[in-house]
Length: 89
Image 1: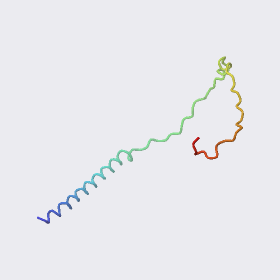
Image 2: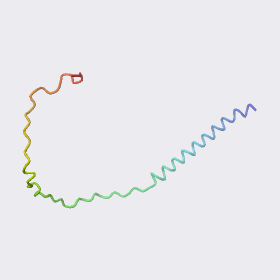
Image 3: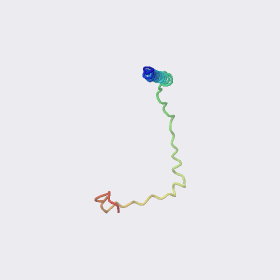
Image 4: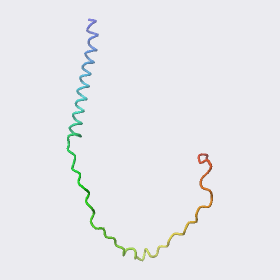
C-alpha cells in the first residue's frame, strides 16, 4: 500500500505534463491557422492624387482684406533661464 502512494503523484505529474503539451500544441495550431497561414494582401503602389486646383480668388475676399497684421515683438533683452532651474521660486 505504501508503494502506491508514491506512484500516484508521479502518475499525476505525467498526466499534467501530457496535458500541458496538448495545450501548447493546440495554441500553436491556432496561431498557425489564424495568423500565419493567411496570405498577405498584395501591396499596390499608391495612386497619385488627381490634379490639385487652388482657388486664389478667395484671398481677394473683403473679409480677408479687413485683417490687420500682427505687431512686431521686440527681442528679449534679459538673460535667458536661471542659474539652477531645479530650485523652486
